[in-house]
Image (cartoon, rainbow, N blue to C red; front, side, top):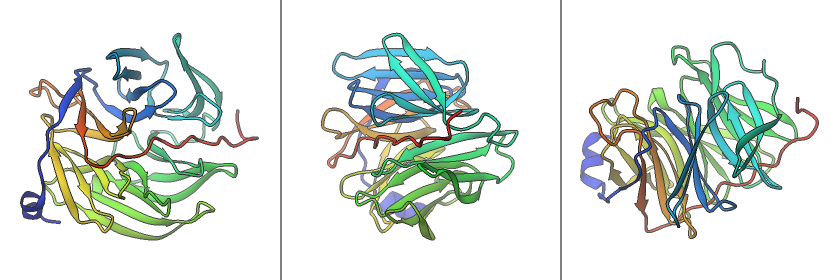
Length: 303
């Protein structure tokens, strides 16, 4: 995909600022139906943020260790990817409280951490790992379900954005540093096949970060150092893009009561001359999306 194609074929929409939270590395936005709120994290500050649209209520907590993502748990509560592993998480008016650990603390190699995650329509958890210094290409794509943690793909430089097609038959995953969105066929048993390059970005087009699918199968991708989010047709063709007043959007998700508002997190790191860097943004979209599927936790492998 060329820069000229982006400029010629894209349609421009407006993004509005929801919260000038100033996240150093805002990530992992999800809509919580239970809280009627958007949840997202700041990995570098080890913070969890919540925002309720109906009354503009905002709350932030600092955790004991960095949290890379939070997803809803079947039966209530959440599952959180901390830098040292995956845990159950309770969140109420008293704040977040990590509980039972689902992976051992020694599970990730030294110098590695978890990064982005998503859950499919069968309650399986998909997540990536990466070298925290972003030097080595030793990241993995993992699946966690009743069979435990399984390595599904390897040799990523920076993992990001597991996303799923509306029919559940395609999993999208990014190697951000290599500027490529990969696609896999995903079967009912959670097996991946037909690994292929779905979208590749040019040197000056930005790096694909977090992403999500809408109800028509369009893939919305946040472009780090690209200053925008872009929607792609299921065949990988660019449909539209929305320019943001920041250069480093990090991820996006659908939220609101009708799941028809696209919320976008961003990063302030390296953006000292951008007043809105690290803010949370909102975009009205003609096609809505999906809430995050609830994670069905495995039994017998918690610590």
